[in-house]
Amino acid sequence: MIVVNSIEELKIATANLKGSIGFVPTMGALHEGHLSLIKRARVECDTVIVSIFVNPTQFLEGEDLDKYPRKDEADKQICKLAKVDILFMPTIDMIYNRDELRVEAPAIRGFILEGSRRAGHFNGVLQIVMKLFNIISFNRPKEFKAYFGKKDAQQLALIEQMVRDYFLNVKIIPCDIVRDSDGLALSSRNVYLSKEERVKALSISRSLKRASKLIMQNILDKETIVKEMRGVMSEIEIEYIALVDREFREIESVEIKNSIILVASRVGGVRLIDNIWI
Ligand code: PAF
Image (cartoon, rainbow, N blue to C red; front, side, top):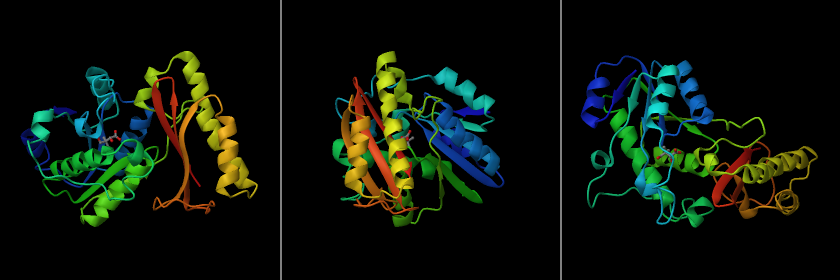
């Protein structure tokens, strides 16, 4: 594995690559969720490139940018063991210019749910992802795939839309959510949870399981599902429970194979999101 710290070095490192590139963008503090994306890219692509960049533009004022977990040395080891070919770790100065052109999230899909709680967050995500796609594919690989987790379902939908709307030459590969054995969806933010908070946080995945049980019994209406889920999560602060189709339009009733149920909540000071795809 080579570790590359500048865009110029990255261009050189990718200049003579043959075959496909599998790209996994991350903000570091790698866990099994990231590893599952890397493993899939390793199986499906000739060259695997991972980026680690804690992107300041997707954090709003007062969010956890300064205390976002940073584990560069451990992350390098994880990537090496996972047989990553190139690890790209740029600095903020290399990525951002002053008064630069902006990519903006769409006015509706980008500003509902996560976008309404974190207004501007998706602008920052799309900005950095666009830049990373351009940097990584600078030498026009034969095939270019990028791997994203379904846990950040709205982010995934918006990145897919950006690829469509801007005619980008990259194939987005959505990957399943990875959970701990107790059901908690993996997230770099889970490290902030105390033992007691973690126990409470388990009600999130339990509520989603409850929802899928109801759906298996053919109970598909949003009102009943949300009411039951609220009951399961009675001990935590729920920001929202939402039912959307795969295009991220809010729906009143589950459509089998075309729905996502999403939860955002706060446990202690920690904001957690989770979802299931129906
Ligand atoms: O999902 C993430 O970790 C980030 O939003 C991403 C896609 C790496 C962009 O900074």
